Length: 191
Image (cartoon, rainbow, N blue to C red; front, top):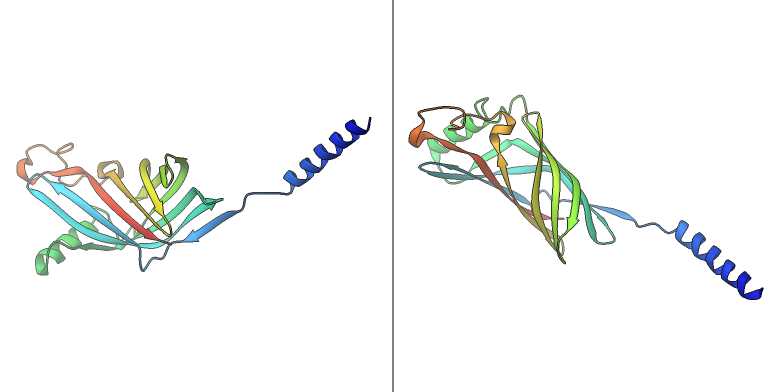
């Protein structure tokens, strides 16, 4: 009888202990001054590279394990880094125009993590919703975290966001003026 009472007391104590113990979610704000997003876009005759700034962002951790993230990108900061002078200004203006990202109507883009799966010690497979030009699409990518830094590379099909300028998928006869539908984002975060 004493054994049953002891077991019951231990079980009750365990239930009470675990009922009041929770994993604490920690949001770590991204340092927008030290973090960077580089874009690369490709065309038949070459490529262009540039940057765009993070307006705000955070990563959410449970017990040091990544479980979420939210980011806002300032599309007005689209910058071309492989050109100078008039060519640079002309391409930046075109990318900000309605032909591409329509920055005056859509000054921000966003990414919200919807699912995070651990794939290794510091590696995660992230699924999220990315919104560009008012349209939201699903995106998946790998993200690595080391200390207070994280990096990822995403491929985005611009045509899913109604950015069709120069796309051979929508226009015939472009030949060497065609711009590939996918562009790449290389993200280096500090938090």
